[in-house]
Length: 266
Ligand code: SF4
Ligand code: SF4
Ligand code: F3S
Image (cartoon, rainbow, N blue to C red; front, side, top):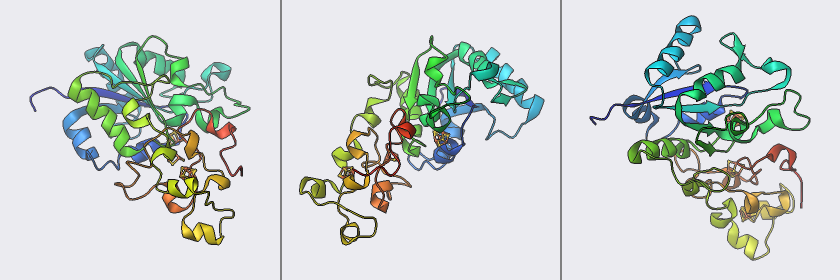
């Protein structure tokens, strides 16, 4: 309670803002407690009250005052074609703003598929050359928290861990927190007994779909997707895509847009 709140700068590049939409719905911990008691969200183009020059001044002041101590959270990615002209923020290419803010950061969190891997804007033929954060910033520790978007409690869980233990969480070979991305959706899926028994949905509206059989033959990517959806679930643990009747499309995996995730049947 006496420790000063850790400053956080949250930038938005090419993205859809649903990582923020997910984040603000965290229930454990409540996002209100994270934002008001744990971190000091000094700059966030989307959530802050200030705009225009006042906002940009806040960014500069935060960087100068907390150089080496703030966490940089990045939602979205920088497009590099045509000198970054496909994403202008604060009057300059986002890639410049990213490099400027990254230089004094203690660590960087890449939120979601956009920042971690590129996501839909980097899908072939990637006309803007949208590029994941770690390929632009190479001299800072980076934590990837993939998903489109990531689970709210995974996002606040990563922040809580960093502030509580004052260190990075253990990362896997791809730079993701092992505690949330150490298992496949398939490993803990409640439909797994049907997979093991060879009981599959063959059409979206068949009898087996009504019985809740395995969605593997409908293209479910749970067997190759590392994420916590089948354990933590979404909306305060209420459900996740497979529970609502649709297979996993592998939204937390690198390049899922180009890997036949959408409605490719087995
Ligand atoms: Fe939106 Fe997905 Fe990108 Fe997050 S990762 S900003 S949800 S497109
Ligand atoms: Fe695995 Fe998907 Fe079947 Fe679940 S629905 S058991 S994740 S293949
Ligand atoms: Fe994404 Fe698959 Fe979870 S589509 S939300 S990783 S179940």
